[in-house]
Length: 280
Image 1 (cartoon, rainbow, N blue to C red):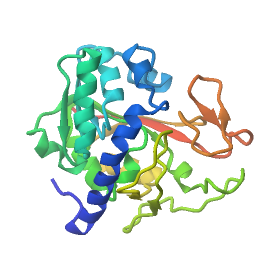
Image 2: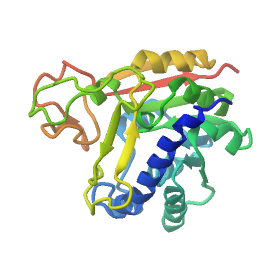
Image 3: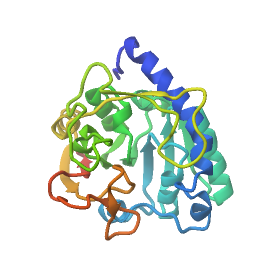
Image 4: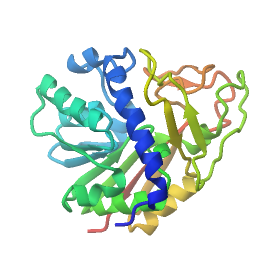
C-alpha cells in the first residue's frame, strides 16, 4: 500500500505533535462534554445515525478517531469497534475513556491512516467510518482511498461525514461575507498552515506545538479516489448545517448542536456525507 513520500514526514510529525498536545485540552473541554458522554447524553449527529442505520453486530473501524468518543458512541449502538489515530496521546485517552465508560471489547491502535491496512494486520471490517475534520489533515486523497478500500470487507461499506471542501475555502475573518481565500482542490504543499495556540475548543492554549498543516480535497477528487480504489458509490448528500460554529457569524440551526449561515443558506454547502460499498 502506497503512502505519501518521505517529503511529507515532517508534516505528519508536526501534526502528530500538535494533536498530542491538543488531547488533554479536548478531553477537559466543555465543547467535547466528557461528563455528558459518560452520562449517555452526548450522541452522534442525527445525520450520521440515520444514514448509517442499524450497526448492531457489525465490526466497525473508525479511522482518525481522535480520543474515541464517537467510536465508543458507535459501540453503544451495538457495533464492535476499532479506532485508529496518528496521535499516541489520543489512543491512550481513548483506551482510558472506554474503561471509564464501561465499554468492553473496543480496540484502539496508534497508526497513520495511510498505514492502516498493515497496522491492522490485513483485518477488514463490515463498516469503515470517518467523521468530521479528518480529510483536511491528509496530503494525498488517492492514497487515502486505497487504504480505506483495503480495510472494507467485501460486501461491506464505507461511510464519511465530513466538512464540505467549500467550507474550508472560506475566510473566517471576513466579517460575515462569504469570501473564498483557501484552495478548493488538493495541492502538493499544504493549502493552509496554522500557527495558532488556540485549538477549536475552549481551554488552555497550546504552548509546545501550535503549528499544523492542512490540505483541501475537492468533492469530485474524493469521490473519484474512492471509485478508483474499487468502491461503488451509494449516495452523496450535501448539507446546509454544520455541527459546530465553523464561522464566527453562524447562528444555531433547527437541529440541536448545529449551526447555519444567518442568511444565504442556499449559497454554499457546509457538510457532506457519502456511503460507498465494496463488491462482495
